[in-house]
Structure formats: C-alpha cells, structure tokens
Amino acid sequence: MTGLVLCVDIGSTFTKVLAVDLDTAEVVASVAHPTWASGDVADAVAAARARLAGADPRADRAPVMACSSAGGGLGIAVLGNEELVTAEAGRRVALSSGGRVVGVVATGEAAGLVDRVDAALADADVVLLTGGTDGGNPDALVRGATTLVDAGWSGPVVVAGNVEARQRTLETLARAAGIAAVAVDNVVPRIGVLAPHGARVAIRSMFLEHVIGGKGLSADPDLLAAVHGATPDIVLRGVEMIAAVVGEVAVVDVGGSTTDVYSVRPPDPEDAGLAREVVATAAAARTVEADLGMRHSASGVLAADDPAARATRAVLPPDGTGPGEAVLAGGAERRRTEPGWVVPPAADGNGEWAVEAEIARRAAGTAVRRHAGRSTVVLAPDGRVVERTGVDLREVGLLVGSGGVLRHGPAGLAERVLGGLVTGHDPDGWQLPGRARTVVDHDYLLVAIGLLAEVRPDVARRLADRIASASGRTI
Image 1 (cartoon, one colour):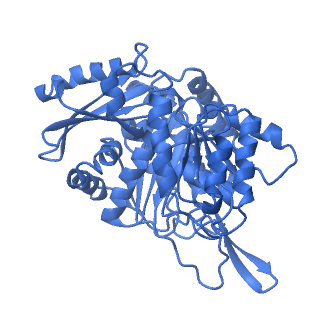
Image 2 (cartoon, rainbow, N blue to C red):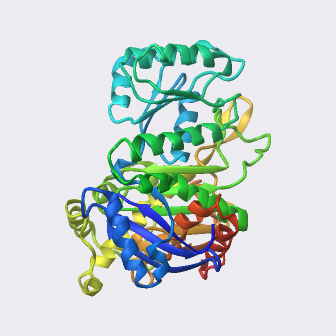
C-alpha cells in the first residue's frame, strides 16, 4: 500500500477524514462532514473526499480505510456464570473490543434470571457467552446457552468459555433458528488470567457483518469492504502502537455522548501483601462512560454522584475559579437539548467556554477515576492487605487528551481539563498518573494510527512518534 490513503472515522454526528501520504507519513489534509446529511453514510465520505481533492488531487481516487461508531455501535450483552468471575471477564473483553455493553447477566444466580436476560438482550446486537474455567465446571457454559435459547434469542453469539463444554454449547445453540455461533478461546482459562484476543477478533467480525451491513448504514459495497472495525477498537490499536513507542500510556477521549478511557500498561506483579483480583486486568483496557459527555450526556456529568464524581468535584480548576452550579446546569441543559450547537469563538466573553471547560473537566476526571479505581488498605484475618480496583495508572508516563472540546478549545482549556488528572500522590487512593506528560491529539491521529497498524505498521509507528514527541506539559 503506497501513495495517498483516506483514513475515515464515520461518527454518529460527524465523519472525519484524514488524507495520509504513506510515502512521507504525513497528514496532507483533514476534513469533517456531517454523517447524516443524507440517508447513506457513504455520501458523507464522498463529500469529504471531494473537499480533500481540493488540497490534493490524489484524494479523488485514494483508497479508503474506515472505522465507524455510527448507528449506536455494536451492542453487546454478556452472559457469564458468576458476577465477579466470568461475567466480569466478559464485560472487560467486550469493552476492549469496541463494543457498547448493554447488559451483564450472571446466569448462576437464579433469582429474576428471565427478567435480567430479557433486559440485557433488548438492545443487544451480539451476545458474548462465557462460563467456567478450563478444567472447571463444564455445565455453566451449557446452562448459559440454554438460557439464551429459552429467551428466544436469534442473533449471533461468541462462545468464549470452558473448552470442555464448547461442543455441547454449540449443539445447544444450534437448536434455535437464526443463531450464528462461533467458538473462541476461553476468556478466563484459569482464575486470575484474562485472555481477550480470540473474543476481540470474533466480536470485530460480528461488528462488520451485523452493524455495518445489518443496520443499513450504507448500501455502498465498496464502503462496507473498507470498514475495518468499530472506532473504539481501532483507537485502542492506536493506543497500543503509542505504548510500543513510549511505554505506559493512557488516553481520555471526551465525546458528545460518552467519555472513553484507554490505557496500555503491563500487568503489575503484585507483591505478597497485595490482594489480587479474581479476574486479571488486561494490558490494554478501555472503559466507556455513557453518562458523561459534552452534548447528549452533558447533564449526566453534573448529576453523577458516585465516589469518582464526588472526588472530581472536590478538585478545583487550576485557577481556582469556574462557573457557578446554576450557570453550569443551564449550560449543560442547552448542550443536551441542542447537541449540534457549537460554541462560537466570540463566546469567550459570555462564559460559554468556561462552561465547556468545566463540563469537560468533570467528564474527564470522573471517567479516568472510574477507569483507574482506588488503592485502599483493609484489615484482613492475615493482616493489612491492599485492595485495588480498576487499572493502576500511577506509573503512566504519557496522558493523551482527545475529543473535539480539547482539539478546538481556546488556549488553556486542555491544561484545565487534563491538569487535575496528574496528581503526584493522591491521598484518597485514586490510582491516577503520578507524574505524566500531557498532550492533545490535535490532528486526530489515533484513528489513522489504528487503521494503519496492520497494513503499514511503519507509517503507523511514525505517526505514533508524532504524538509521543508532541510538545506538552510534564506535571
């Protein structure tokens, strides 16, 4: 693959296109176009291509590599045997696969099982079925399959549980009309181990077939063939590429509907005094906070009342000032009800950018704290034990900010949003970066890096170097 390529992110609101010269590893030009200007997302890509051709005539015939989060993305329901083991493992794998987790059900708990399964399947496009470690109980996975069949599920299923129960599970699912099932390696082959790769690959394939093709986003076969995966899955690949350059890295992407946090860090061999989680944390992790966003979920940012949200509110902005709660509430409501509204440059004087910055600060702070979790000392029968939740980000050396509010905001906004996430030592135990350089992905390179990671890893690496070496602030 040489010459010019168009790296396309088909978003739920805007379609962003970067023209990348593969011979020089440079972004020649980039544009954004409304995704739903017509009824086919291919029209948005065509309009963006036409605009890019004005900057470089090669764009008129350049091949397209695309990812998409349009149409609500891929809704994944997770069925596992136990809430804290296989069901939790399935949830983590689904998130790292670029899916939107619409329900998690522990089938080993009989109380209210039918209602819980029905609720989880209501918005699902695919089911990730887990259950049992390899060599463990073989009945849990089959019971999950029976539950799906009894619930009338007829969609695709990824089976990622006890290897000894695989064949019986597939035979159980085959009794129901319409179920297309694929079996992959167990996501929890043994306690304390998480093996997401096989399930991630299968879920990516399900996304391409059942979302891009099945939801009628486009009738253009060329565009369907050009889509390589869900946008969050592609971005995670890009984050992994940056980690290959700089080591431990975290990314916070503040969007209109969700705030996503990505991290790549090697598993930390805990010392003997540290409590291990039953389900290990993957080296590459992603969390999605659907109640935190700049537009559709702006009110949720202010309403969030979990420990992470309260801790974020307690941290003052860098200059100790900010809009009052009443002003914030009004601004959040406007953004929720007018999601297409753009803060004009002239709005600096009326405080709209101050509102924008504070909503972004709270969204990013709450999302990163939920992702990172806390480290606390508890008393156990054998003495003092440290319990951890989430992904420990304290040794992360690079924190990357992404999202339109960070890319297009006035000077100082990104520092206001990201600065409070690098804490040195957090006395409340939040596992936030202790000392990290903060940069903003101004050129939207993460998507291009992820798309090119497999076909032109050399170009992806050079683009990753641009983010890794970008001027930023070390805090």
